[in-house]
Length: 456
Image (cartoon, rainbow, N blue to C red):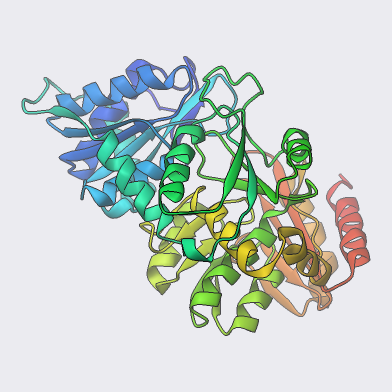
């Protein structure tokens, strides 16, 4: 039995023809319904050159297991999430590598109810069965059904339901799909908005799906990838800009001046959007940068609840606390009324409604940046991460007002705080620093912690 290296903590991803190929994909497709007892499975794929053939292997494997395959074709990961609940399927698979390099692919998978998969809820069993590769002959009764049109229409209706279209004012929005999967789905949403009298207009760039990614892999979180969108926003005179990653489960914002809006402030904005409609709502946030979100929620009378970083933890917290929204600074945004899953399309609609009601995106964010400046996530590649983290803890813990170990270590020093986390897969330590109204505290905190981390 050969170990499969493409299995990660919550999904599957790896280098093509090294960690993942058509034969391995087929084995995973056979293992998925056996591990979960699934009879009806939703299947989607992104635009990568290898995704169509890999999705074909998944479909063949599911049919050989006697499953009914509900085929979405080219679609975003979140469309698969939604379709699993909409069709009351037993699980779903989207063949995607999101923002990984060109020579990668993978799969994102969920259980019935669009619930996340991890080692304890089926992923370990899928891995074991795929490694054993003892499936035997195919089972009769498997079918493939094209559900693209029904699924897309229902998905669009659900996404648009998150806003009050009558509250929108005329806004010009620049959208950058990065030649990923977002373009056609966005067009369907825009068509629905227009049919319902929306005053929004759009400027599209890099809009058509292209698996060769002529502009590079779409990952707007990387600073080097942000200037094209920022320049286009300014040139178009847009009210704000939106850019997506490859499977559009993350979206990123730029104000009318082309300034990138850091993820922690977007979490605060979306929390505000929900709290304006329900001031007592619960909001989930990750532990990295927390003060801005907690302040926004407290001012509105809501309840802020912290959960570990990672989609499985945030989704579970949303379900456990009946929270209306959960956000991570990495640009994953989760919604109770969207199967408690993440979406990259719902956020820009909420921001458009918020800007229509409350003023420019730049103005909405400026006060929050001033009140709670932050460093953004800084990565350090170190030879001995545990020793480096120990040095930082020994320096700051004696002065700490509060120590939080929800995810890594968070140390609150009163006027500023930081979170330090070690990667599970690489010798990398991730640092986030924030302060109360004083940017110099962020700068000095980063400087001192950098020195301690890099001593060795």
